[in-house]
Image (tube, rainbow, N blue to C red; front, side):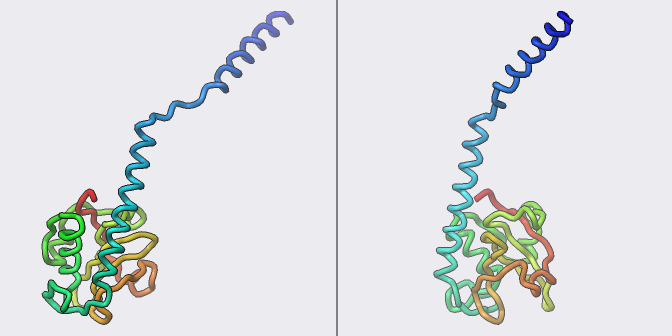
Length: 163
């Protein structure tokens, strides 16, 4: 009986000591997470500010101005002007740039691609299923990935730059 009380006391001591120790979480990890969130918020704010300047600009094949812009031109200008990142000019070149990203891991600034009736279409992911793009029918606008039209035509997403 005496041995079992000793063993029980020893085990209880180990249990209390182990429970009192908090798991070590590196402070660098927390700082990195906070920095990534702040950076994502900065990208979203920049994209929304840029969108407010371009909203409603009509679509024009090959266009690169506020008189008219196409989807890849809008993407090209947005990355160049807001982030200082030089991207290819065409949708087909953009679709081969950077790294493929699963749809469930989209981050602000990722490119989203669609297969549409007359070729390919590109937009820029903002957040919460929203992306900005130059639509042929409505010009520069914001749409939702979960819209049935865009869901049905979704092709791929790519991360082209660390923003």
